[in-house]
Length: 162
Image (cartoon, rainbow, N blue to C red):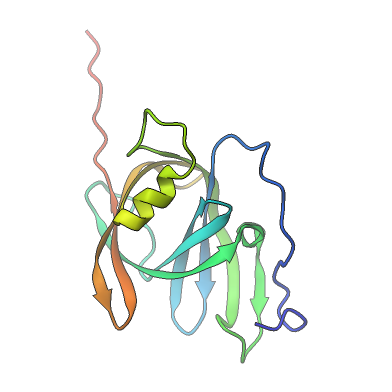
């Protein structure tokens, strides 16, 4: 990628003061409209392309194709990637917030998300403006050298008060 032509971030930001990791969902008007789900894991944004967008109904499933990790600074990127560049097209931030790793609730080790990613089983609680609640990312296999995952919205249990 040529950063002279593409107005994308290239500098590193200090994240030591932030308690919870962030997520961002970018709506990407590239060759095909899709949504890029990005989770902060070990200082970078692990990324998935979600062609039909994140599910909003419980038990709904969406294909999520693993893509290249991005610099953390990409979380704030909105703009147009010029024709001829990788990912050419308009990018807007559709939602942004924080998340909690639910697979390793009792541990404070930040590498747990990296372990979840490697295992192909991610369970998080998103806290965003549009996306809230528990979501699963489950690796289902590899097709055409790309990891295929499912993004699933969990059904939240409703508490009954007497």
